Image 1 (tube, rainbow, N blue to C red):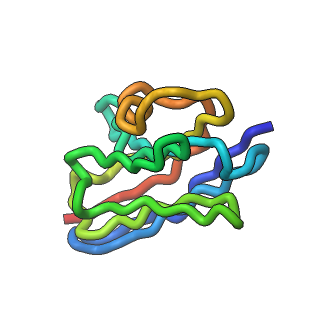
Image 2: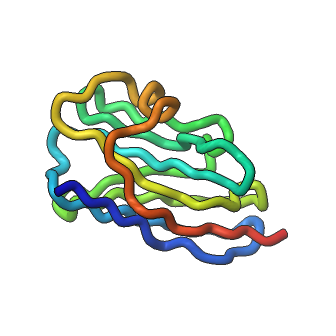
Length: 128
């Protein structure tokens, strides 16, 4: 059974940093795609960073490019999202999601269209 658990959210002042973790189980970081999504109250879900092992590319949404960095530890089956220079508009529930064997589509396409497996979110609140 595929399971994803995001953690690391919290309250931070504008300009601060947080690192989110996504612990994955039920599959290995071999043939996979993983992504970070967020949803603020009253807003649509936004795919902010996605990686696909099939093309090795990492996509970042314009809203986070240059401030957020996704990384992965294949040995630990864990993905991370380093968030720097946080802004109040980054306040949202953050989710990690994954596609596993047999998926297709670019990293950008997966970020814009979602993935098959989702974990529970972790709340990030950025105060001004």
